[in-house]
Length: 435
Picture 1: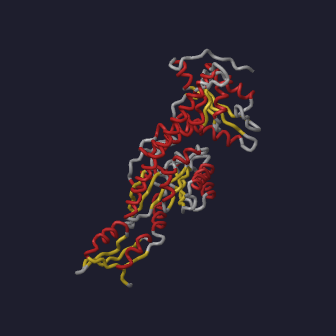
Picture 2: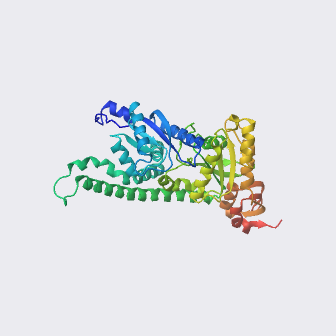
Picture 3: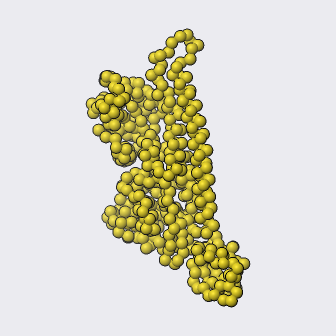
């Protein structure tokens, strides 16, 4: 089968633009993969691509024994995919597996102009469109630049035809490419400096929060599992919560007052996804640092998803990658209102001790709040304290972070009986009275 070239199109031509926005999706099934696993990943790619507004004309799963260094798939399958794309008037082929820069150049050359990109580029583009805060914008920009740097050669390959002169003469394309590489490296260095400054500001904010030491809980989980909805349900916040992947990228922290009067800090973090680009894991270390620094993690699993086990495994693996794998975890099975009894029983067996929750109906929320209370108070101590009047700031600190059982004003100070969090106990021992 031969791949016929289409007439070259002007990049500003409406037809060229239309073709560039129409795509064929390609998933891979290796010998160790089941058909169900390959289809699940392809379905997820479909949702990721749809988030960018790209029109998906068709999709297929290519079975391969081993990867081809030239096109990822064999030459015969490559021609078949290219022909399918042309028959649907698509200019874009999107692979669920990572493509090397050389493979992308080979696809463009051998298919006579079809662009081939991969899942990582799609995720990066989604992050670019969703980033809002300065930190998230910088993190995404850094990941994008790191992804672009090894792919510059493709942008200047058209200058190869302009080569002239003797063997010692430098190629115009090489010269321009080297200049652009230097510009990108300079920009990467600047973004890293700016990001370091923003990270330092976040560390200062975190230090300020810890001046009134409160237990910290970070909500983690696979993207679209319902993390933002949980934060909204528990705290009355109004964080964007949509039924789409990566609806929010920026961590949001809210104060939550429990029934005992105790307060905690609850943070919603960016969602995880399978095959998350390594550059994003690195670039988002600062955002995910909220999870690393938290006292406890609340792992949200989408009970309605048939891929919930793999999604949970992905989340736990990323937590290990960023150094948060040893944190105490509360697992909740969200969207319980969408699951039948058999699914509930199966999920509880796979996640012993998990809590069935519905942020929509409120099912399981009281039990979750009690579990949070139990975790936060695990090492609390009941103390009877006498705070002198000239230590009023300490009394304010006690009221802000401890559960006050009783307080009585006396001539020289205030006698207080309180449940004091572990991290505050050492600071208040000088005013503790013997029981």
